Image (cartoon, rainbow, N blue to C red; front, side, top):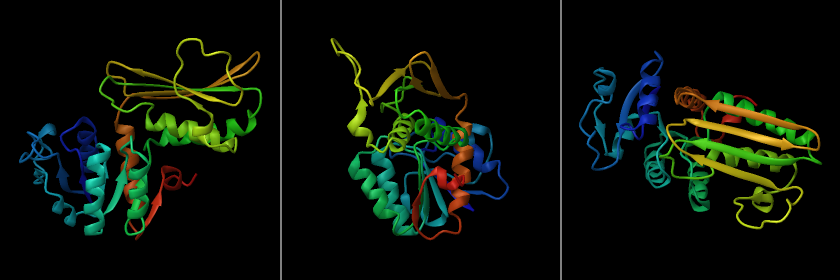
Length: 263
Protein backbone atom coordinates (compact mmCIF):
# COMPACT_ATOMS: atom_id res chain seq x y z
CA UNK A 1 0.00 0.00 0.00
CA UNK A 2 1.06 3.57 -0.71
CA UNK A 3 0.63 5.60 2.47
CA UNK A 4 0.60 9.39 2.89
CA UNK A 5 1.17 11.04 6.26
CA UNK A 6 -0.30 14.39 7.34
CA UNK A 7 1.47 16.51 9.93
CA UNK A 8 4.76 14.98 8.81
CA UNK A 9 6.93 17.37 10.82
CA UNK A 10 5.21 16.80 14.19
CA UNK A 11 5.77 14.21 16.90
CA UNK A 12 2.87 12.02 15.82
CA UNK A 13 3.79 12.48 12.17
CA UNK A 14 7.30 11.21 12.92
CA UNK A 15 5.88 8.15 14.66
CA UNK A 16 3.61 7.43 11.70
CA UNK A 17 6.41 7.82 9.14
CA UNK A 18 8.66 5.50 11.14
CA UNK A 19 5.86 2.92 11.43
CA UNK A 20 5.25 2.97 7.66
CA UNK A 21 8.96 2.63 6.90
CA UNK A 22 9.21 -0.34 9.27
CA UNK A 23 6.57 -2.38 7.40
CA UNK A 24 7.74 -4.10 4.23
CA UNK A 25 4.24 -4.16 2.71
CA UNK A 26 3.86 -0.36 2.98
CA UNK A 27 5.41 2.44 0.96
CA UNK A 28 5.63 6.06 2.06
CA UNK A 29 4.24 7.94 -0.94
CA UNK A 30 3.63 11.47 0.40
CA UNK A 31 4.29 13.58 3.49
CA UNK A 32 2.24 16.72 4.17
CA UNK A 33 2.93 19.74 6.38
CA UNK A 34 1.13 23.03 6.85
CA UNK A 35 1.97 25.91 4.53
CA UNK A 36 4.89 27.86 5.92
CA UNK A 37 6.38 24.94 7.85
CA UNK A 38 10.17 24.92 7.99
CA UNK A 39 10.05 21.21 7.15
CA UNK A 40 8.75 21.75 3.61
CA UNK A 41 11.34 20.62 1.09
CA UNK A 42 13.07 18.27 3.53
CA UNK A 43 13.17 14.51 3.12
CA UNK A 44 10.42 12.92 5.21
CA UNK A 45 12.93 10.55 6.81
CA UNK A 46 15.49 13.21 7.74
CA UNK A 47 14.63 12.98 11.45
CA UNK A 48 15.66 9.30 11.29
CA UNK A 49 18.78 9.99 9.24
CA UNK A 50 17.16 8.14 6.33
CA UNK A 51 16.71 9.15 2.70
CA UNK A 52 13.19 8.12 1.67
CA UNK A 53 13.03 10.08 -1.56
CA UNK A 54 9.75 11.62 -0.32
CA UNK A 55 9.91 15.39 0.14
CA UNK A 56 7.60 17.06 2.66
CA UNK A 57 5.10 19.29 0.85
CA UNK A 58 2.00 21.40 1.41
CA UNK A 59 0.57 20.45 -2.00
CA UNK A 60 -2.51 18.29 -1.50
CA UNK A 61 -2.34 16.96 -5.06
CA UNK A 62 0.39 14.68 -3.70
CA UNK A 63 -2.48 12.55 -2.39
CA UNK A 64 -3.19 11.43 -5.95
CA UNK A 65 -0.28 8.98 -5.56
CA UNK A 66 -1.51 7.53 -2.24
CA UNK A 67 -3.86 4.68 -1.45
CA UNK A 68 -4.50 5.99 2.05
CA UNK A 69 -3.78 9.14 4.08
CA UNK A 70 -3.21 8.85 7.83
CA UNK A 71 -4.11 12.11 9.56
CA UNK A 72 -3.57 13.06 13.23
CA UNK A 73 -3.55 16.85 12.80
CA UNK A 74 -6.20 19.47 13.70
CA UNK A 75 -9.86 19.55 12.58
CA UNK A 76 -9.48 22.45 10.14
CA UNK A 77 -6.50 20.81 8.42
CA UNK A 78 -8.10 17.36 8.40
CA UNK A 79 -11.22 18.70 6.69
CA UNK A 80 -9.08 20.23 3.93
CA UNK A 81 -7.29 16.90 3.53
CA UNK A 82 -10.67 15.15 3.48
CA UNK A 83 -11.79 17.13 0.44
CA UNK A 84 -8.57 16.24 -1.38
CA UNK A 85 -8.93 12.55 -0.51
CA UNK A 86 -12.45 12.48 -1.93
CA UNK A 87 -11.22 14.26 -5.05
CA UNK A 88 -8.42 11.75 -5.62
CA UNK A 89 -10.20 8.61 -4.41
CA UNK A 90 -7.77 8.19 -1.52
CA UNK A 91 -8.79 6.33 1.62
CA UNK A 92 -8.34 8.05 4.97
CA UNK A 93 -7.51 7.09 8.55
CA UNK A 94 -8.51 9.96 10.86
CA UNK A 95 -7.13 10.10 14.39
CA UNK A 96 -7.73 13.84 14.75
CA UNK A 97 -9.95 14.89 17.67
CA UNK A 98 -11.88 18.04 18.54
CA UNK A 99 -14.38 18.08 15.64
CA UNK A 100 -17.64 19.94 16.02
CA UNK A 101 -20.92 18.54 14.70
CA UNK A 102 -20.38 20.10 11.26
CA UNK A 103 -16.95 18.49 11.00
CA UNK A 104 -18.31 15.08 11.93
CA UNK A 105 -21.10 15.51 9.38
CA UNK A 106 -18.54 16.33 6.67
CA UNK A 107 -16.69 13.10 7.44
CA UNK A 108 -19.93 11.11 7.20
CA UNK A 109 -20.70 12.64 3.81
CA UNK A 110 -17.17 11.98 2.52
CA UNK A 111 -17.44 8.33 3.61
CA UNK A 112 -20.13 7.86 0.98
CA UNK A 113 -17.43 8.40 -1.64
CA UNK A 114 -14.27 6.95 -0.07
CA UNK A 115 -13.44 4.55 2.76
CA UNK A 116 -12.61 6.13 6.13
CA UNK A 117 -11.62 4.88 9.56
CA UNK A 118 -12.46 7.61 12.09
CA UNK A 119 -11.58 6.96 15.73
CA UNK A 120 -10.47 9.15 18.64
CA UNK A 121 -7.84 6.59 19.60
CA UNK A 122 -6.15 4.06 17.31
CA UNK A 123 -4.51 2.09 20.12
CA UNK A 124 -5.50 -1.58 20.17
CA UNK A 125 -5.34 -1.48 23.97
CA UNK A 126 -7.67 1.51 24.24
CA UNK A 127 -10.21 -0.18 22.00
CA UNK A 128 -10.03 -3.34 24.10
CA UNK A 129 -10.63 -1.06 27.11
CA UNK A 130 -13.76 0.36 25.43
CA UNK A 131 -15.08 -3.17 25.07
CA UNK A 132 -14.44 -3.82 28.78
CA UNK A 133 -16.23 -0.57 29.65
CA UNK A 134 -19.29 -1.62 27.69
CA UNK A 135 -19.45 -4.90 29.61
CA UNK A 136 -18.87 -3.20 32.98
CA UNK A 137 -21.48 -0.49 32.34
CA UNK A 138 -24.13 -3.07 31.49
CA UNK A 139 -23.45 -4.91 34.76
CA UNK A 140 -22.99 -1.79 36.91
CA UNK A 141 -26.04 0.03 35.59
CA UNK A 142 -27.54 0.94 38.95
CA UNK A 143 -26.08 2.21 42.21
CA UNK A 144 -22.74 3.26 40.72
CA UNK A 145 -21.46 6.75 39.97
CA UNK A 146 -19.21 7.04 36.92
CA UNK A 147 -16.26 9.40 36.59
CA UNK A 148 -14.00 9.64 33.53
CA UNK A 149 -10.50 10.91 34.29
CA UNK A 150 -7.92 11.78 31.63
CA UNK A 151 -4.43 13.33 31.61
CA UNK A 152 -2.37 14.55 28.64
CA UNK A 153 0.67 16.69 27.85
CA UNK A 154 0.62 20.46 28.19
CA UNK A 155 0.30 21.04 24.42
CA UNK A 156 -2.99 19.21 23.90
CA UNK A 157 -5.57 21.83 22.99
CA UNK A 158 -8.93 20.00 23.23
CA UNK A 159 -10.55 18.78 26.43
CA UNK A 160 -11.84 16.35 27.42
CA UNK A 161 -9.81 14.17 25.09
CA UNK A 162 -11.54 12.38 22.25
CA UNK A 163 -10.79 9.10 24.00
CA UNK A 164 -12.36 10.28 27.26
CA UNK A 165 -15.48 11.36 25.35
CA UNK A 166 -15.63 7.98 23.63
CA UNK A 167 -15.37 6.26 27.00
CA UNK A 168 -18.24 8.38 28.30
CA UNK A 169 -20.27 7.65 25.18
CA UNK A 170 -19.63 3.91 25.62
CA UNK A 171 -20.96 3.95 29.18
CA UNK A 172 -23.94 6.13 28.24
CA UNK A 173 -24.81 3.88 25.30
CA UNK A 174 -24.74 0.83 27.57
CA UNK A 175 -27.19 2.70 29.83
CA UNK A 176 -29.39 3.57 26.82
CA UNK A 177 -28.95 7.32 27.27
CA UNK A 178 -27.20 10.07 25.29
CA UNK A 179 -23.97 11.38 26.82
CA UNK A 180 -24.93 15.11 26.54
CA UNK A 181 -28.01 14.37 28.65
CA UNK A 182 -26.04 12.90 31.58
CA UNK A 183 -22.55 14.44 31.38
CA UNK A 184 -21.14 16.74 34.07
CA UNK A 185 -18.35 18.73 32.44
CA UNK A 186 -17.20 20.88 35.34
CA UNK A 187 -17.70 21.49 39.05
CA UNK A 188 -17.13 24.76 40.86
CA UNK A 189 -18.53 26.28 44.02
CA UNK A 190 -21.58 24.87 45.79
CA UNK A 191 -22.60 22.14 43.38
CA UNK A 192 -24.89 20.26 45.76
CA UNK A 193 -25.01 16.46 46.00
CA UNK A 194 -24.32 14.38 42.95
CA UNK A 195 -27.28 13.49 40.75
CA UNK A 196 -27.70 9.74 40.17
CA UNK A 197 -27.05 8.50 36.65
CA UNK A 198 -24.61 11.26 35.69
CA UNK A 199 -21.14 10.81 34.18
CA UNK A 200 -18.46 13.21 35.39
CA UNK A 201 -15.28 14.26 33.61
CA UNK A 202 -11.94 15.37 35.05
CA UNK A 203 -9.00 16.70 33.00
CA UNK A 204 -5.27 17.17 33.67
CA UNK A 205 -2.88 18.95 31.27
CA UNK A 206 0.81 18.99 32.09
CA UNK A 207 4.33 17.92 31.24
CA UNK A 208 4.80 15.31 28.54
CA UNK A 209 2.06 12.84 29.54
CA UNK A 210 1.27 10.79 26.45
CA UNK A 211 -2.21 9.78 27.61
CA UNK A 212 -3.80 8.32 30.77
CA UNK A 213 -7.47 7.37 31.05
CA UNK A 214 -9.38 5.87 33.98
CA UNK A 215 -13.10 5.25 34.31
CA UNK A 216 -14.33 4.89 37.90
CA UNK A 217 -17.50 3.01 38.84
CA UNK A 218 -18.03 4.18 42.42
CA UNK A 219 -20.55 2.16 44.45
CA UNK A 220 -21.34 1.79 48.11
CA UNK A 221 -18.46 -0.06 49.76
CA UNK A 222 -16.50 -0.66 46.55
CA UNK A 223 -14.93 1.03 43.56
CA UNK A 224 -14.08 -0.46 40.16
CA UNK A 225 -11.41 1.26 38.08
CA UNK A 226 -10.68 0.49 34.43
CA UNK A 227 -7.45 2.16 33.31
CA UNK A 228 -5.39 2.52 30.17
CA UNK A 229 -2.03 4.31 30.11
CA UNK A 230 -0.05 5.14 26.97
CA UNK A 231 3.72 5.29 27.39
CA UNK A 232 4.46 5.88 23.70
CA UNK A 233 2.68 7.27 20.65
CA UNK A 234 3.90 4.21 18.76
CA UNK A 235 0.76 2.35 19.87
CA UNK A 236 -1.36 4.90 18.01
CA UNK A 237 0.85 4.64 14.93
CA UNK A 238 0.68 0.85 14.79
CA UNK A 239 -3.09 0.96 15.21
CA UNK A 240 -3.36 3.49 12.38
CA UNK A 241 -1.33 1.23 10.10
CA UNK A 242 -3.68 -1.62 10.97
CA UNK A 243 -6.64 0.61 10.10
CA UNK A 244 -5.10 1.54 6.75
CA UNK A 245 -4.74 -2.14 5.85
CA UNK A 246 -8.37 -2.72 6.87
CA UNK A 247 -9.48 -0.18 4.24
CA UNK A 248 -7.40 -1.63 1.43
CA UNK A 249 -10.19 -3.49 -0.37
CA UNK A 250 -13.06 -1.20 0.54
CA UNK A 251 -14.49 1.41 -1.81
CA UNK A 252 -16.41 3.54 0.70
CA UNK A 253 -17.89 3.54 4.19
CA UNK A 254 -17.23 4.95 7.65
CA UNK A 255 -15.62 2.61 10.18
CA UNK A 256 -14.18 2.82 13.70
CA UNK A 257 -11.43 0.84 15.40
CA UNK A 258 -13.97 -1.55 16.88
CA UNK A 259 -14.74 -2.61 13.29
CA UNK A 260 -11.04 -2.79 12.40
CA UNK A 261 -10.41 -5.11 15.36
CA UNK A 262 -13.55 -7.19 14.82
CA UNK A 263 -15.03 -6.19 18.20
